[in-house]
Length: 82
Image 1 (tube, helix red, strand yellow):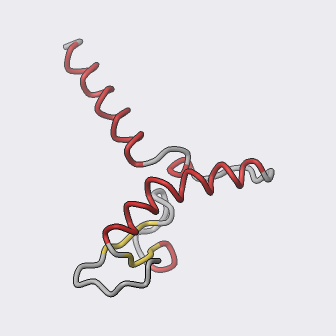
Image 2 (cartoon, helix red, strand yellow):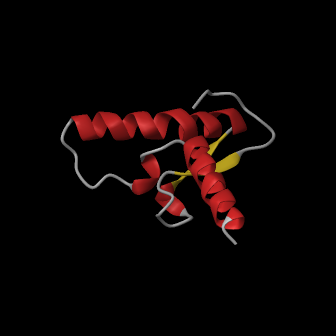
């Protein structure tokens, strides 16, 4: 997305729920991959919902940081209750 050539590129999944290949992948630099997952997906999700699009991908609702924080909280809750 940034146009910079980097030695290390990463595969960004457009839909986490989708296939791990082909049209569901973007090859991005590490910075663009982070921006895509943390900012672009949630903002596009909200814009499309505001435009009346239904059945958006579940993985686009929250940034990867929000998803990780919720998973960590759930894991702590489970470990403290056992």
